[in-house]
Length: 115
Length: 116
Image (cartoon, rainbow over all chains, first blue to last red; front, side):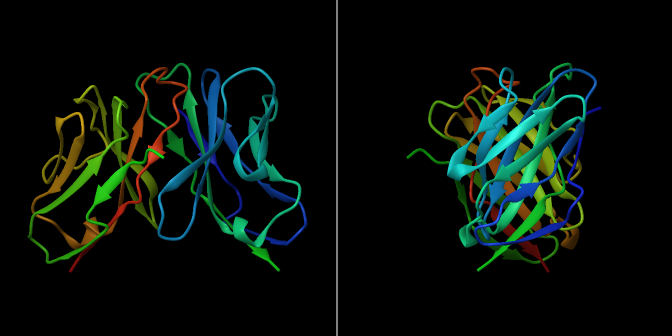
C-alpha cells in the first residue's frame, strides 16, 4: 500500500526566510511524487512533480523539491518565502507498482508566512 | 486558461434531500476524479473515471452515493438521501490520461456541502 506522511501540521516562517515543508512516503515500488497547494476556498493547484531523472525538481512560484530515495522523502522548499505563500500544502504519491491511478495525499501542512 | 468547473459552489440542504454536484472537466481530459475533503479525514478519493467508464469507486458509500459521466463534458456526483456526516467539500479533478501514472490532476474549486 502507498502512504504519505506530512509530520508538521503547521509551519511558521518569517517573510524572506527559507521555507521547508516535509514529506515522507511509503511505497512498494518506485514512487511518483507530487506537491499541491490550496489557498482558502480554492481547489488544489499543482506545484511540481517527480517522475524520474534529476532528484531536484523545480516548480511553480519559485518552489522546488528534492527527491531522496534513501530517506524516502520529498521535501518542498522555497529559498525566500512570501506572505502570499501562506496556504495549505499537500504532498501526494503514486506507487508505480500499484494498480489503478490512485493518488494518495498526505494530511496537509499549513504554512503561515509572517511579514 | 483551461479549468475544471464545478457547480454549485455552495449547497445547504436538509437531511434526507437529494444533492447533485456537477463537474465539467478540462476539454480533452479523459480521466475524472471525485474527492471529498474534511478536517477529520483529509482528502479521500471517492471515484475515478477513464473515458467516462467508472474504474474505481471503492471509496464511495454505495448505498447513498452515485457517480456518473453522461458525456465527456459532464461528471455528476449524487447523494440520496443526504446525511449530516456528508457535510464536506467535494472536489472534482481531471487529467489528460496521456500517462496515467505520471499525469497531473487538475482540481476544480470545489462544492461546499452542508447537510443540516
